[in-house]
Amino acid sequence: MGIRSLLSKPLATWVVRQQQQWSQAPEESQDDVLKNLLARVKTTVFGKDHHLEEVSSYEEFKQAVPIRDYEDLKPYVNRIVGGKSDVLWPGKPAYFAKTSGTTSGAKYIPITKDSIPNHINSARNALLSYVHDTGNSAFLDGKLIFLSGSPTLEEKGGIPLGRLSGLVNHHVPQYLRTNQIPSYETNCIEDWETKLGKIVDETINQNMTLISGIPPWVQMYFDWLIERTGKPIKDIFPNFSVLVHGGVNYAPYRQKMIESIGKPIDSIETYPASEGFIAYQDSQSAEGLLMLLNSGIFFEFIPTDEFFEENPTRLSIHDVEIGKNYALIINSNAGLWGYSIGDTVKFVSKYPHRLVVTGRIKHFISAFGEHVIGEEVEKAMNHALAQFPEAEVVEFTVAPQVNPAEGLPLHEWYVEFAQPPADISAFSNIIDKQLQQLNPYYDDLISGSILRPLEIRQLQKNGFREYMKSQGRLGGQNKVPRLSNDRILADGLQPFVGE
Image 1 (cartoon, helix red, strand yellow):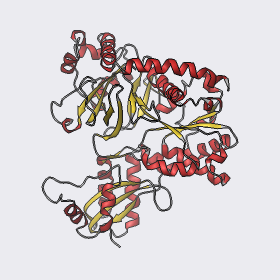
Image 2 (cartoon, one colour; image 1 turned 45 degrees about the horizontal axis):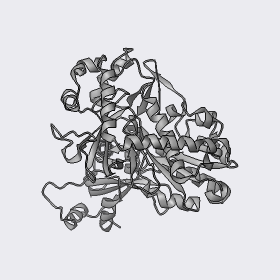
Image 3 (cartoon, helix red, strand yellow; image 1 turned 90 degrees about the vertical axis):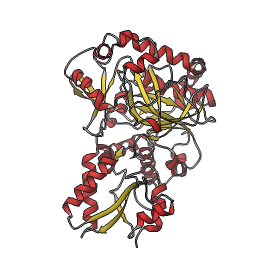
Image 4 (spheres, helix red, strand yellow; image 1 turned 60 degrees about the vertical axis):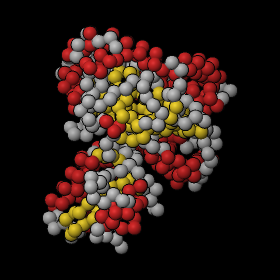
């Protein structure tokens, strides 16, 4: 047993003991977080604007701080970019995490000195919880790979800017640096295929024991290794024992991943976001992810069926119920207040509070981490129709195809034309190019050969109508969603696809 694995066990015991204390007293933990947040924010621009020096309870807080999205937060971010301090949190952010926007381009999410431990310690504690739960610590003595974005940073208003995974790379604990792969130089390569080739070169003869990343990127790494060697992953890396994943739903990838590895393997699911590390899997046997209730984030929950109402119900951890869907709202020491991150969650247990991510509050596709929204697919379709004036669309919807019969995954567009375009291939290509321009994540996935360009499946005349009729949803207020993150609608449409 190596020194890392040996030392990890008492540290894991300590972490889990602390974890048990706050998770069994979730209300007190969250009350303390809110109290500490209010004590720090009251002297900031945001605190003064919302009179938070007068707030001493959650009920008062709800009256003072409205629910907001990034567009509502943006004026404060712009003041930080302009050089002002003490805007959303005391001082200036340590970083901006760059993430995809929905209406105004990129979003710049502040990460402060106080919020960095939420990201770093939570990732560490997820591993230590696994060590304590399983007794397996040997993986810490081997080579570990974190498939992440480039750690190369830009600047925004004098503040370092980058993707979250790249920012976090700068804070990997020193005791893991010596067994972390890939090299820093390789990690800085922007082109994914070039980078992946270098990663394969650097790892193929190493004792890889832990692999971490978003499932489609990990699967592509596995595919390249198998193509290079002709062997399953278990034969390339005999001591590989832990897979860490997050970012997208793992379920569609699980079977192919196991086939690529060649054996079942322990996995740790995490729920990180640019806005904060929300939860992680603390048990190999219990359902759901442990919500991190003492890590600088005060959580609120809005029943999803009320989210778009003018005055929706806002709940703290005191009042959540098992089995109900909630939109997740955060208030944090990164300077986010009443902030909707767009996710929906459902609790599967209390004491400890474990949750599962059930989707997004709006229709979307993010099976591969692309975060494509309805507005984007509609703009792409309209752009193509403008160039093919003879074409007329009755209805359309979009779904991911994670496991096609052959080739790379893709988006499938199910379209019913009243009059098809003269050149369906050119029409499809224009949609795809436009979608790449509208959505940088989709563009990255196409250019990185994670996805292939979209394909159109033409439906028979009245195909959508017959489908809705078969579901008992014809007429009334029933609508075909523009896009879905699963295959339920797409599979239901298969009988109506034309020859």
